Image (cartoon, rainbow, N blue to C red; front, side):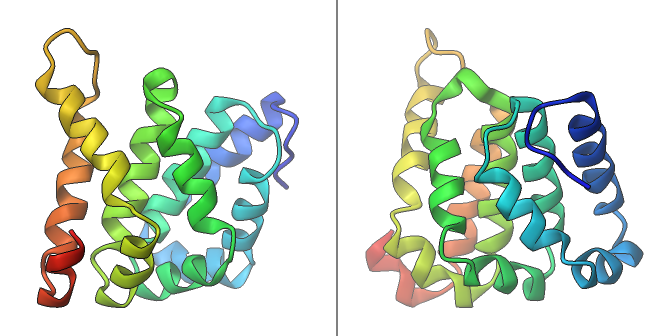
Length: 164
């Protein structure tokens, strides 16, 4: 089980879940075991940045499947949790990168466009883009890349254009 106290067990468990979620043959078992909901609960508890980052990596991998993304989007606090991490700034680079991966995968599903845009997903992405243009700012290239992919995915539906 995952615990939120930042212990070595938490780190290993969240890393194992992230690694297992990379293989499509494991997705049904992971989802069927309720690990998406458990991961979302974990993110609401105090935990180390390593645990948070690995949990977001797992959710990023899982969110590549549209059905799993729908499970995540049904959780009322999910977007708030992801936005909180993204807005924390560059101090937790790995967590922010993995949260951006979640956004890009969720944005691949047109059904998610409206809630993402309603919650102003573009605003924190624009901050990343501005930071990438400032040679004095330290930014993470992969975070910006996932942000650009999010915008590209959101742009796939003409109804989203005015909101972007």
